[in-house]
Length: 96
Image: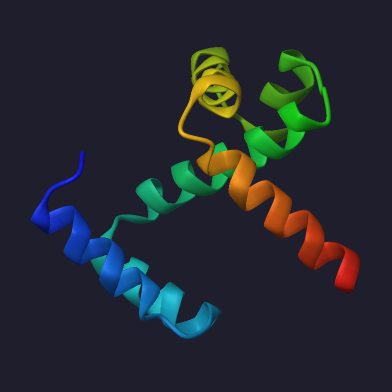
């Protein structure tokens, strides 16, 4: 996955300053369906971390069991990206 084009994309994302800029950039660079799919996967990861059942997750998010399985595999055996962001999100929620 690592290549100069991906590096440039991630550098661009890191330059975004707030949620409004994220909405503007992602609206231009991705389809609404792609953005919704990414958001859905993050929600699936949050629910899996709380040990919610596949059936409940599928009902609550609309994700297929294949998507839930893929997210679970990444959550526990991936590059720890989900773990990283879920910890930061939890820390941010505690501050609120």
